[in-house]
Image (cartoon, rainbow, N blue to C red; front, side):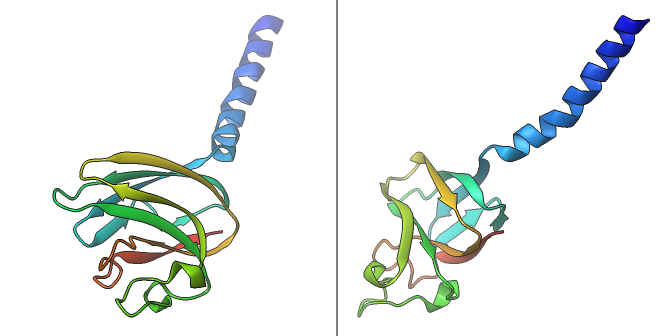
Length: 137
């Protein structure tokens, strides 16, 4: 009888710990880049390690994926004369450049709590609305 009780207690403890262990690991956000559109599977994550699984779903355009930490709204980033974000005037956390059509790339970052912008800054794409607000809490 004692063995059954110990096994039951061990299984119960394990069942309680698995969600905690999984929650402590990196969060995964799937991101689809399409023709002038960026679509993440979530727009809010817990602060800490995050893996962005980025897929260029466009059939005819090269894209890039840029993470900017800012208090500004996604539509209010400083731009140059061509309407592209001036990356020298913002805090770029990390980026993946030159994603060819159908390319897939994982980008691992550690995000502090705060506001971010996810965008494509390939010439002309930000001006076409390829950006969105993102939050780590």
